[in-house]
Structure formats: structure tokens, C-alpha cells
Length: 147
Image (cartoon, rainbow, N blue to C red; front, side):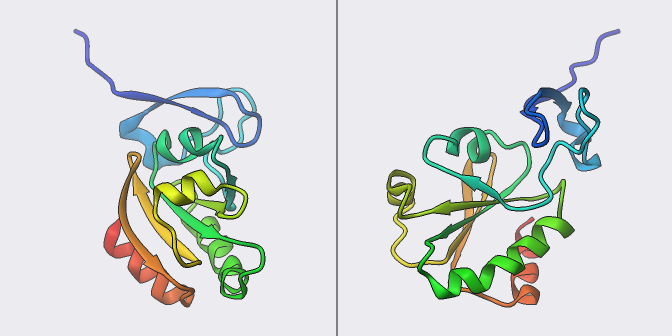
């Protein structure tokens, strides 16, 4: 008897090894078969135009993308909140940070006109977007409604 088990391939954030993961077991926050570390990140990941496909589109778990710039005060104020959310929702949500000044192609694709802009992505598609910094409780509530 054969069963069709759906899998995805994803790289370990610690060592870069490609791991084949069963989609039904993604919520179990899998470990890398090579180094034994958790595959999904525990802190925000820097994303560029070049890594957008791998880090966001191909991610087997939802991704909250923070479109930001280094000179933006509200972006800096939001950063610790995103670090906390990355740690508490590790394995279930990835936080990705895209500097809009260094990566204008992707920022342009999403028509980013003000920062910070947070876009929740699932299976490579935008689910919802919110603009501006918000307190952790409000952002957690926003995410919980959408995840």
C-alpha cells in the first residue's frame, strides 16, 4: 500500500542544508537532518531582491514581510516587536525584513509607498497588508486573525 505524502524542500537557517519536509508535519517545527538545529528561523531574516523567491515565495510557512528603511524612525521602533514575534511564533511564522532602499525591485512590485509596511504572505501570495508601526498586542491580534 502506498500513500502519497506531500513534501516540500527547505533550507536549514543554521547550516543551509536542504531538508525534505512533510507538509502535514510542518507545524511540529522540524529539525535539520544534518545539524539537528531547528530549520525555521527564531529571529527576523534579511531578505533582498535576490533572495525573495527562496525566503518568501518558497517558504512552507507564512511570512510576515517588514518593508523598511534605515532612516525610518517608526521602522526602528517596530524592530524589537518583530524580534519578539519571531521568537514566540518560531516554526509557525517567519519574519522577513526587506530594506526598500537597497531592494527597489521587490518594493516596487508591492507598490510600497510608506514604511513600515507589513505584508503577510502565505504560499507566495499576499494575504493582507498593514502600514505603520503598531504595538505588539495589536500586531499579535492582527496576525492571529489571519493565520
